[in-house]
Every structure is written in C-alpha cells, then in structure tokens.
Image (tube, rainbow, N blue to C red; front, top):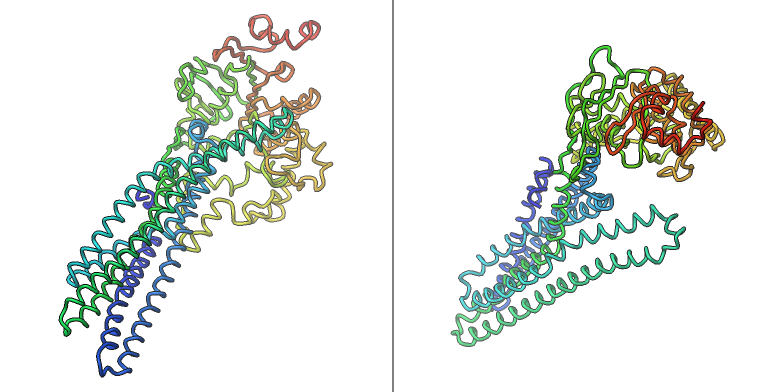
Length: 633
C-alpha cells in the first residue's frame, strides 16, 4: 500500500493532510468528553453546587460532541473524495499500461486477471482509503493520547488496562497470522472464477454443441467452492474479532469498577469523591483505548486484501513493454513502402527453439508478397514483426529503409494497415468500425501522453479527451463528432463507402438497416465470420497505408469474393506494399513473390510457376489443393 500511494497527486495528498487534521481534532474532542464528565460528576456529588454550573458543563460537553461529529463528517467526505479520484487514476493508468503491452506481456497476465485487477482490486484499494487509511491514523493517536491521559490516575487501573491491551495484541497477531495467507489467495481464486466464466461465455456455442454444460458447471462449481471456502474461513476468523473486543472491553470496565470500589472503600472520606471522579474518567479513557484497538481490528480486516490488491495492480503498472518506442517518424527518402527482412531470427519468450531462423527477403512498393507454409511454420509470427507486435531476436526488420526499432511506435503503425488472423469488431456502427484506425481521438489516446491530474474538474475533462470518452471524439464515424465541418464529414463518409466497396462488404452492408450507420454488436456478434473479415479489410484500406498486412484474412471468404477483393485491392491500393499470409494457393498464386516457409526457414522464393519447378514444399501444397489440369494451366 505504501508503494502505490506514490501515485497520489499533490492535491490528493493535501486533502489527506487536511483529513488528518480533522482526525486529530476529532480525537482531541473525544478525549475532552471525560474531563467534562468528571466536572459534572464532581458538581453533582458536591453539596451546594449551582444548577447553572452543571448546565454550563453539560453544554460544553454537547458542543464538544457536535464538534466531534462535524470532524467525523469532514473526514469521511475527504476520504471518499480522495478514494474516488485515486481509483479513477489507477484504472486509467492500468488501462494505459495494458494498452502498451505486446503479446509477450499479455502472456504474463490472463484476460480474466487483468479485468479483476482493474475492477475488484482497485475497489479494495478504494475501500481501504475510504475507511481504513484514516482509521489507521486515528487509532494509534487515540490509543497513545488516551494512555497519556490515564497515566497518573491510578497504578492499579493502568495495570489492568495494560493487561487488556496485551491480550488484544496477542489475539490480533495470532488472527492475522491465520488469515493473511487466505486473503492473498482470495484474489487469485477470484481470477480463477472470472477465467472459467469468461471461457464458458466466449465458447458457449462449442459448449452446447458438445453437450459439455455439465463439465463447465463442474469447473465453475470447483472454482466457486474454493473461493467460497476461503471467504468462509476468513469471515469466520474475523468474526471472532468483535466478540473478543467486546469481551475484553467489558472485562476491563468490570476491572476498573471493581478496583475503584476497592480503592474507594479503603480511602478516607475526604478522598472518596476524588477517587470516584477518577474512576469515571478512567473508565471513559479505558473504553477509548479499547475502541482504538477496535478500529485497528477493522483496519486489519481491510488492509490484507488492499495490500494484496495493491501488489497486483503494481505488477501491471510496473511491467515494462518489451517493445520500446524509438524516436524516428520518417523513413529514408525514396523508400516509402519498402519492407525488408535481413537475416531475421525470432524466439518466443520462454521458448527453447526459435520460431523463425535466418529469414531474408524484400518487398518493394506496389508489390504483393505472399507467405505460405504448413501450420506452425512461422507465417503469422513473421508478419507480426513488421508492426512490432514482437521484436526480432536477431537480424533486422526494415520499413522504408529504417530498422523498425528506431521508429516511434505510433509513427510506424500509422504506415501499416493490419488485418489480423482473427477479425475483431467493436461495438458501434459499420462506419465507426471501418474508420476506427483513422480516428484522431483514438490515435491520441497514445501511451506517451502525461496523465492529467484527475483530482480537478479540468484534469478529468482533459483525461476524457485523451481517452476518447468525452462524448464527441468517439462519435460513430460520420465525422461531425470530432468538430469536422460538413465537407469533412461528407469526405469521410465517401472514404468509408469506398473502403467498404473495395472489401466487397457493400453487398451486405446495403441490406442492413441503417447502411453504414447500422449497429455492430460487441465483438461483431451480429455479423458472420466472412462479414467480419470484410469489414476488417475495409478498416485497413480506409487508412490508405503504405503497407497492407493480411494475416490469413481471406480464409472465411468464398473463392469468388476472395478474387473480387484481391482485384479491388490491386486497383485501389496499387501503390501499397501488400504482405499476405494464406493457406490457399488460389489466394496467392498471382502474387509478385511467394515466400515458402518450413519449420521457420525460407525454403523457396519466387512466383507461382517458378516455385512449382524449384520448391518441393510448395509443389506438395499446390498438388494437395489444385487438380493436375489447374497445375498445368
């Protein structure tokens, strides 16, 4: 928790210091009450006391109580405000950190774990700041101050209080020793539940197709029972805390009064009133001491989980991306669109064997270079090195004549239109999905922008602008939401329409209610696999990039649509370098160059006709897909 507090802003630290002053004021006021109670007791027991003096002392006591209540309200308000602001900052920082992760970093954290860390874990931290942090400050101040007040009012009473405090400290220590390991495991078990639930929901069709509902229910039940059992253990253990506190407090009160009765009985008549008054005051202060430990016990309930949660959040925030952004924004003059691999080898993190071995080729502007090979030969890995999803282990990957590691990551990826193997659509409209990569608000939500101070209203507005959540920057794709005038909006719509046409997606988009503004569900669940692929291709084409990368992006298309898309690309993106990974010979046989991969090595390069005669691996693939007549043709 101490390490994560360095993310507090100066304004939040100032507010917490103000809250600390209110805590000190509240403790001081609470500890003044026994003094007034002693005065009232003395006045009541003294003959001839004026009623007016009792009313004055009672009024002061009431005023002190109201002051304590006001300090408590101010403390709670400040703590809640700081906790909410701090939680917002942590979520933004964690989201930004995850956005900067490459596949290597994502492999360290499961999706379910990252969701838990950005929701449940940060909620635990907020709860601790709201309730625990100020209690953690208040309890020691109250205990020490009350003990100072007690000192000198009776050795016997002080000894009884010391014994009670010792019993509480030993009990709390033993309890924490039991439950702390369980608190640490609870967050991991929460991850497990989220993991099982998410896996079941994502693969619901497969689960139902294989009648595996019972198996999935058993998995969830096992994870749920593990978490429930741990929570029951910790709750039962912590349930001992309150009865223990009450027992010790009642026992201490009994001891104070028993000792007081003994002392009063043994004292002279002139000293009995003083002893009785001291007993009343002492009983109040001893209750304050026990209450301080009661508050500490509440902190002990919140602190272990908050500490574990803070550690998990810091793990995400402290993970540095393996892909470090360079400084270059431009390539070498006259080499725009050139992609070159120079003796490139690549090994996945933690793997023993390299996935790619000494790969070399060059793709010039306007060329179509295709990659083919058996499953696991390294095709997708190879093209993922171009946009720096990974960095080459050995050798160089050059774009526009410059090593990709020298580029600013955003500048590099701004040159590339990338269509992944698994098509991804976002909730919104057809237009917003196609124009997604060209949205300046989304590009501006980059990783190198300093996070504004969200404790101020202006800072929160600035953060919303940076993250594209201000209600204007994320407008569907008509262009009007980002402040564009009518001509710009019309131009964007025309570009979206053109990209949709090139991807052969207009045949189904035109039939959708709303056309380009037709809604797309989360994950594109309301369109088919082939339709998702075509919209993903349209998204890449919309940007007019120098380089188009297709990672087996035509697999869900029928042969006619596949050919129509490639012909449209040849006309629309004639100047762009096209890198295509494919399994079908028909998709790549017209490419300017075909690179054949086998077990991570290049075993052949050339045109379709050249490779049929020179590369055994390519010829076997072709013979498995084409008839003898087609091969001869």
